[in-house]
Amino acid sequence: MDISAKHQDMTTVLTNVIVLGIFEDDKILNPVQTKTDKALKGIISNGLIKTEGFKGKYSDTVIVPTQLKIPADKIMLVGLGKKKEFDCSKLRELSAKIIKQLDKTLNIKNVSIEPLGLKCGNFNIQECANAITEGILISTYDYDKYKTKKNQQQIKKVRIVLEDAKEEKAAKTGVNNGKILCSAMDFTKDLINEPAQNATPEAIAQIAKNLSLDLGLTFDVYSKKQLAQMNFNAFLAVGQGSEQEPKFIHLTYKPTKKAKKKIILIGKGITFDSGGLDIKPANSMLTMKTDMSGCATVLGVIQAIAALKPDIEVHALSALCENMPSGKSYKQGDVLTAKNGKTIEVDNTDAEGRLTLADVLTYADELNADEVIDIATLTGACIVALGQNITGIMGNNQEMIKKIINIGKKSGENLWELPIFDDMQEMLKSDIADMRNTGSRYAGASVAGRFLQNFTKSKNWAHIDIAGTAFIDKPYKELNKGATGVMVRTLTNYIMSL
Image (cartoon, rainbow, N blue to C red; front, side):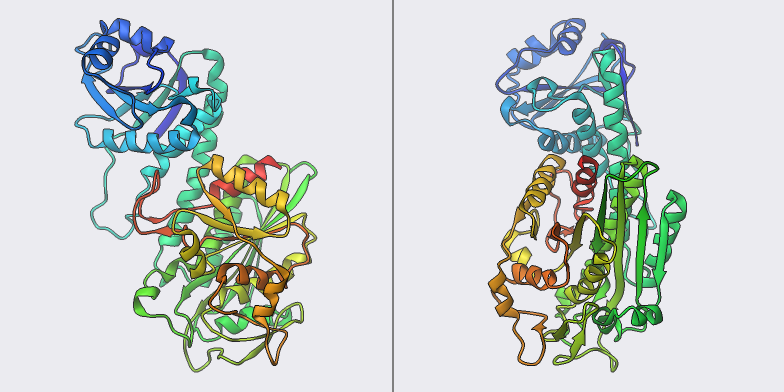
């Protein structure tokens, strides 16, 4: 779908439908609406608002023909709700609803839309254009790779029509940034949705290599033999039950100017999680192709960063393997020596993601970064605590965590901080090793975070648990069912803000 922004008189636009927004608590028409209303002989002010009683409640819509009074075929009036409550998140969701409704309306291929809700004062024109673009593109994502009959979108073009020519540059920047983020999200969602039979460690390593060649990134991949020499022992134990050879990938974006900061993103990369010898029930295993969502996320973020080109050095790391049961699998009671020398008693082979992350966090220490962020579908406990629409975050720097949460809110992604306390280490106590890889049934998400903290020396570390939010079983706001690409927007926007 082609989305653009242009200064033009709305009454002269040749289009199938014009979309205008009305607030519930402020029905005074803006200049564009006033001019359009006048050209239409009062259809909006007298017809729809006064006579028909359009109230402007959030997401209410009405569509009427223009009766050939202007080049547009139809007018769509959409309710924006209350001014003080209207923000970019509501605009993003509303744009998704508008485009879905219009795509089902007969003979709509070309849509022109004003900068909805701009007069609420809660965002500028660039943020407005960005939110509209993201809402449309995210909502129209469709993974139909393996369907013989592809779904066809009726709408081909959307133009954001601007009243002021001075707004055009900023609006175009907003549209372009939205396209970059949504392209990165699509990449991430495609990779998460890909069946595990094709998204193997080797295959994802090749995808990452191709990405580096396309974007001019530095790329390194390490084999099982090399990883053994590097003491990635905890990670290799997880993957030893599978026929698929584990891979560790490292992509680097370096700016042309001197980097202001160095940021490391670590994504959990379990390409299929059966639970190992502590095998999962069948219904719990059904979506375990998605256990590499953290890896897909960091690859999506570095793709967006390469396009946006901030003066920040960004590293994307992921240890890729399958967790499978076989005669070679690691077992309950095994003691593993992690890369940093700490020993771990295996209490449960299905608590495998933290073992792989442990070695990668230690590797990250060697890179001397300013900040380290790991992203993982780590714990069912996080889903129980926060559900499918809120991402858990924890770490050791309150200012950093607060900033990520605030940027997430503006980006349309909700995060909630979970605590990590030093005395949680007691819950990981082992009789024969430095620690176990699981605690009790209580505070599972936080205890997993405390486990990871044993393997990083960074003073600016955040752990993000996307177990509930990476893949959803029903639509939510602008998101469709399935892989969400969660945290691509937040982490990209966070890096851009540094």
